[in-house]
Length: 304
Image (cartoon, helix red, strand yellow):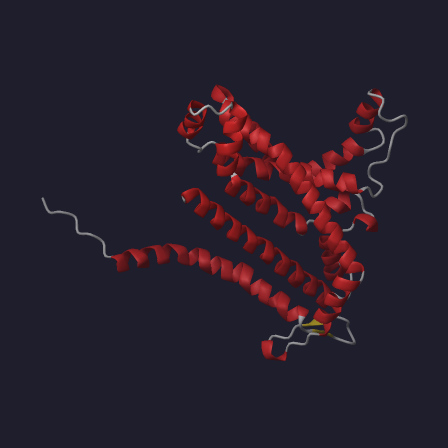
């Protein structure tokens, strides 16, 4: 019987390159090309007669007028306040989501037992309902005659119903947490469930208490998963605009996504909105770069 011939490294590389080609083409067509169009609009001009954007397709002829105007307002005007407000909302919502998601994922991974499948089904259930429908349900909870006011009145925290939909930052932040926390639980669970139990048993054998084993073994090992889950929910939060529109509709809680929506779809300064998109993507690229750096450093530390 003839022995199988080994596959040359060059043929193996060509095989995997062929498999990756459709995905690369998809990204180029539906990400790089639209992003180039956004850049052309941001560095383009506006038709003085019809007030419509005139993209500049030649990068050598790009004008920085709209982009400089956006940067000036971003760092010295109304955009700056909106950007800082967005950062504060996302930071608070991400921290609250982590406080909720980590214990839930840890419990399901460690103590789910025979109920683990049912618990996972419960964690996946929110994905069967669209984000818009879940936000509309949250609106019903926060109305004057909603359950939130009923519970707070029943326990004596409030003496009269409160309008939670009149432009409160707390409503927007809780809405972000409510909408995005399922996206944080699942990656945390997937990582915590793969931690080798023998490492925890070794820590217990060396005299560590359950809390010490968690603090010294489980928590450091789960740092990459924590960073990944933060990136998964923080990046879309920065571009979120419908949560604020549904739960507030007030300029005092406007986020950067609302400004982009306003300038691109609700106004005539589309190049300004495109420049805001570019600024937001540059900021998110910095955050993503820090995530890659921190993850690589954590993996090197664990490997050593």
